[in-house]
Length: 98
Image 1 (cartoon, rainbow, N blue to C red):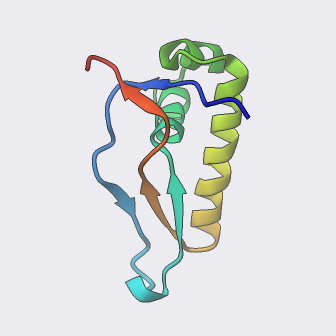
Image 2 (tube, rainbow, N blue to C red):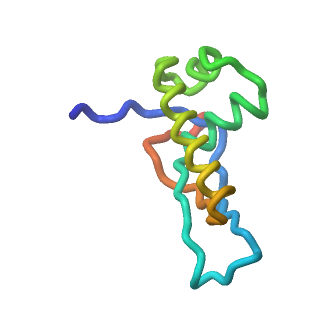
């Protein structure tokens, strides 16, 4: 298996942890999103870029963005439907400007 290509992101999300208030912490399952999934969601849905434009910003192929978005969408849907927390961390990313 070949190593993953570095994905470039605009900024680190910092400590990002979202959790529903209806369950106590010890009974709460979680979903882990990577920083590149967070960035792909931000670029595609918040900034309104096409997958091709987002791929150029993250310096990856368009098909890679498609896979990243699909993974992120599944994780977000799982968290919303099954009342889980979302923690954003990790991934093979470099911050632009560093």
